[in-house]
Each structure stands twice: as structure tokens, then as C-alpha cells.
Image (cartoon, rainbow, N blue to C red; front, side, top):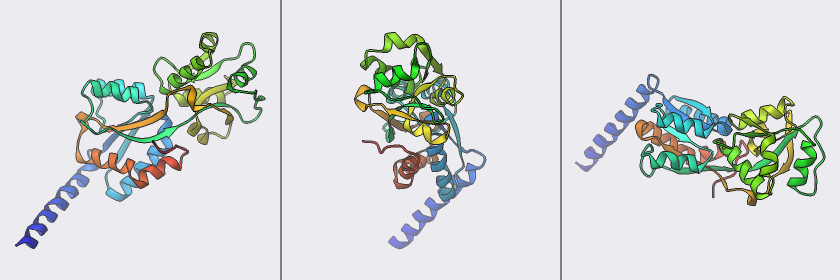
Length: 258
């Protein structure tokens, strides 16, 4: 009798999962992810789909833009942010599934410059900045008003006592990949981006690593969106924090979360 009950439960469970997977082609899991995670999350989603049959559609943008879209009802199931503050913004508004937040990765800031003709470095990050910028060149950053990489860049410049001097010379991009593009195109001799961003461009290289004590820790939280809370979303979140999900991030230069 017990064995029969177990078989019934197992068959019922498999039937439910099969039904979810069958529906996934018509109703894919929508993931909103920070622009800096493009390669890592794409790789993770590909493995997840191959293992589960659940189709994943990903929208990449700045964490602030994605948070605002979720606030206005965009149909996301999972959100991956490059900044805990924007995830907290959603949490405070009741837009995340309760208790679903998990840390999936960490990152590091760098000064990035052209790989063809990199400027000299100084004795510290502040001197290197001034050598690279000269008298009137601009510094490429994600917009510090809302882009996480820009927020960290502002913290760094404030810690160095350079914010007031360099703020008028910022070339503000809509996200961190936009800041990287400004350096790629030669519109700015140096930019403040994530270390992981440099893996997508052969035209940009590390000028100098930014000391981690100049800004808050760069952490990537992920969570299930309340309006899109369903088994597929929770399964993908668990996949991200599991061994294969972690591997997708480390393979693309991310650090493990604390």
C-alpha cells in the first residue's frame, strides 16, 4: 500500500512537471538581468533549458531600468540585479516573492582603456586617472544617478576626493556596457567598468584595478518576481545558485558571492 502511494505521488509529480515544460514553449520564463551579466546569464539559461526543456527569454538592461519596468508591471519571473539597493527597492514595494532573494555573484571595478595605445599608470588609481584624462578628456561611466556601475564609480571618486573635480567631465552612459562602448570607440580615453565587461571586447584592456575598499561590495542578488512567481522561476533561481549556475558566472570572470 505504501509503495502504491509513493508511485501515485511520483507519477503525479512527474505529470505536473511535464505539464509545466509542455507549457513553457508558449509561456517562456522571462528573466530580467543586469547588462553586465549578459554572457553569464545567457550561458546559464542555455544549460538550464537543455536540462529542463523550459524556454528562457532574457532582457538585459541597467538594473535601475529593469527595476522600474518591474514596478510598472513588466512580466518578469526572475530578476538579477547588479546592485542590492535596487533589489531592495523592489522588496520594499512588495514586488518580490517573499524570502526568494539569493546572491549569485560578485564583481570588481577597473579603469578600462584602449588596448591599442594604453596610457601610462601612476603610483595609485587617482594619479592614473589624471594621466589618462589629461586636461580636458572625459571619463566614461554608467550614469551615477541610477546605473549600479556608475554608483560604485561615484563612491570611488568620492573616496578619492575627486568627485567635485571630475563630475563635470563624466561621459554618462545608460548602462555599464554603454560606458565600455565609449572607450571602445575612442570617445573617452578611460572608463570605470566591471572587470567582467572587458572579456567581451578585444579593443579594451585593464589600465588599473580599483581597490575594493573605495566602494561598497559589488554584489549581484537574484529573486523571483512576485507577479511572475511560478515553479519555473523558482527552479531557475535554484539553478543559478547551484554548481552549474555558479560555474556560468565564474567562467565569465565573476567572483563567487561572500
